[in-house]
Image 1 (cartoon, rainbow, N blue to C red):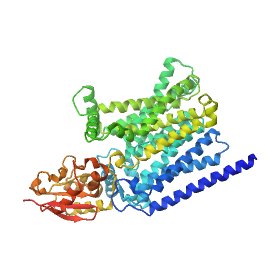
Image 2 (spheres, one colour):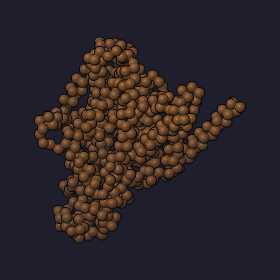
Image 3 (cartoon, rainbow, N blue to C red):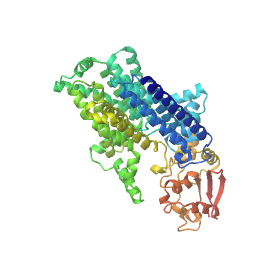
Image 4 (tube, one colour):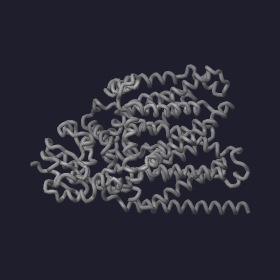
Length: 612
């Protein structure tokens, strides 16, 4: 009887899994057959709905299988556990690759990636790194990949972040297995990591790519502490030397982990606690970790001091200490909140949408601290987890302190680290909630309420973060999509514009685009700002006070209108359309006697305002 029941459940499981894989395959085929034909304000609305539904159900099904395996101690359902891992990881990979599946030409070329692609092209052309580039390692490696693979830089700028995002999940898993003796905690870390809780994805920037390497660095560091063998020492030294060349923010986070380990050593010796970890810490007395720390911090400061940014950061720190008046990130945040509220948008709603995952992870992490302390007092936890807790608190404090400074990186850059540490401690709490008997009275055990609660939390994390992976009207931001029409239009612009005539527009970033499309000599000749900022076209194109743009620009000007400009206040911020630019006013440009359309390709229009 029991054998027949097991066989029936096995057939049911295989049937459900087969159905899910078939639905995902069909949804992917539908998505492939509906490519983007122009600028899309929201990839969520433009992608077939069946894909989002199949991805969500696959994640839920995979989570159920993994949580069920944890409750069964992973022995009876090892095959279903593997199915669960496959479903969850497949859902994660599909979401991050949708913009490629749908044929987006490029991504975020109006932002930082344009500059990085330009520096890569410069390395390929000259064989040297630009003198002002203080984090060149990503650019060097991608230049080598261009030569080795033969792939175009346009393809690589989409594939490289995707690869880092995939292997990051593996790094998080092996890090969790190193920290926790129970493998099932690593399973929950895997589930949370696949919930898109790390804020920044898809973009080719050294900061983002370096962040995805952090769990690997921590893994190597902890394995080195545990095993102290030559291979791990050599590999760790190599990565620590490379990290300041990757990005300074990631290096700062690594330093916090080093410092947290030293603080734990000091805490134990000063208080003379007799924890189990005291034996491990005695081993550390003459451990090479001290040597590695000094290598990293000396090399990091030496490298940064070679560039002008070092002087800027030191000056900013001095102004804060001496209480000199200067605009800080807190002022920028206040201005953003004030503007959001002034235009009728709910500030609290937008904050929750944008940092939904960090809010949940921080709450769960806070709940885990009493459990961690209790187990530590009972000699049941290693110093790895405790040191990460100290680093977590330090990073959280630093992110708040940065609001009172004006460094070149914003406090939001540390959201990734907060999410990373939060993932570890949230998984720790959820595992404790699942496995602790006293948290599950008899009726709870029968109704599987702890398991259902954990699955609901994972679902909320997944759904809340899924809709901010890509910029969209949901979070009041325009898409980072860069269309082929925009690139073609800018090629025309840089080839034929009169460099003595001013250039303006709305969302176009001429200086950023120039980094990708022009060499340094050509960029200097064009002399364009990275962003237009306040020098954009007047609201309503000035038609409130003038009959023609020639009245606004009597000496003439060139300006660019892209599809994103038409979409921004029609699709993303419709409540502001009457304040900025309406569809009627865009159409009126074609009837303006003072304006001449000199180029158009369907997604990019180049106009000239005739001078008097």
